[in-house]
Image 1 (tube, rainbow, N blue to C red):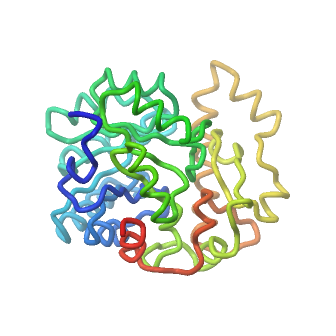
Image 2 (image 1 turned 90 degrees about the horizontal axis):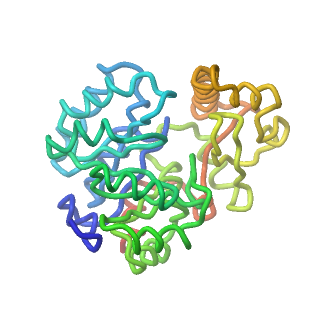
Length: 315
């Protein structure tokens, strides 16, 4: 497979657009709408509390459309359900798996013999070359413009570097909210574009009306990086509450995370606690809300349908 192959050609779909998997936000309605509009989409396995719920969601998507879709797996110690989720994704024969925040070797070993493609989130060339050598089918270049867990480097630099030095397709992720931005990435040689934030304030999205309204009210200048929630840089809206609690882990948390013996357990604890806080904020109205979003929030002015946004971005 050559880097010039587009995502649409790889998956047999109309547009080279991936509606990104978003923790808590992505649901079956959003995925189905994206697929019916000619894009592809992925859903985080961690959005489901039980394996039964996860299987039910994948079955619902598959029964609604035969278009290609995938799942996102967190492949490090913060996700104790990782191997079970991988087994389910393989058993349900999803079309691709997106790996995040860890070493994808087990995913590649399990998925490739089954014909399931593996796309790996990467934030630098070193990581990209490693997963390419392992057998990844494509790279997702997570730039600093991305929402959620973003990379440290802008895709202005990361995307061309990966395209130049890697021999597998590169999907650009970060900051896409307009057709011009989508086209710019494609013209630069990206095999496809992954977009997330722009799809949070949609009719199909399950988050609270307060969250959706915040996406309309705030802009790119209001997006800040916080390490308090997951222990890793996470983009959030700089609400008064976020300003009050700060965006950096306190000294005790920093000390514990540096302790080699305790690091794994502290990381799991911090991640779990932070995700519970995000879940509460996403689905309820509260002053103590931390809402995840990327700079593409700048282009959200109303609540629209997923299909409408797909058409606008790719039109």
